[in-house]
Image (cartoon, rainbow, N blue to C red; front, side, top):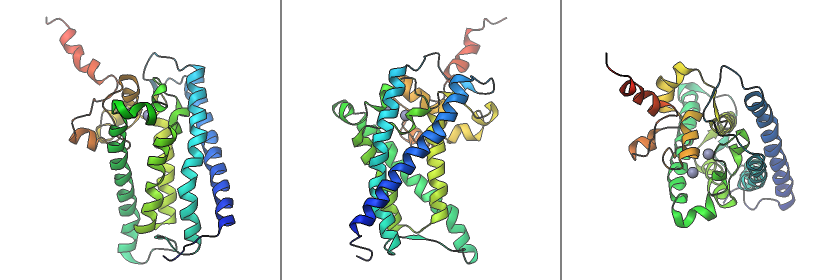
Length: 263
Ligand SMILES: [Zn+2]
Ligand SMILES: [Zn+2]
């Protein structure tokens, strides 16, 4: 295979650098978001549950997130080293012609849908009572998650997710700029879906975005209710498989008219 074997010390360097970048990215993004929401309690954002995250919960979220960073860095470092010697489907340069321009969003959509699909089904498997304790219990110690939970996975769960995008990058052509956009979306999605606060405007949540895209209003229910709402980015698989439990507050607001006595 072209690009193989990769030089050992180059790999160690890349692995160490990537682990440091992932950990730095985690603290630099999560700390201000956590402060802006849980300390400032802004009026424009909606708090999703009355439950208070404990110090022990946050400590667990940070501990697991740091361990996960090393697990995520491993396959990514292998693929980055292979990229240096031309053994991957990652490419650069200015796109030539409409087809190449179109491939930028098309490849992003393929990568995101593949990741969402893998996450949905592996997530459901990890909720099996026999597997849960060993694979996914760490993430669910956050009954009321905070942004610090965005990367808090048990090592088995982290490993189950970490390989997917790097392996896809060996076969499905992707521009490095598209790859960076996907990594950014991944981070923003994970941080805000675990924020414990809905930061998007109410009209977005009640409109197209809320019906199709997963935000904190959807994922917070997975943490507090434990079953249903298994998806990552899109509500698609939850709807297809009948596991969609709607959004925080939706059930209550639907019940409200029944409680009002008829005049
Ligand atoms: Zn879960
Ligand atoms: Zn979660």
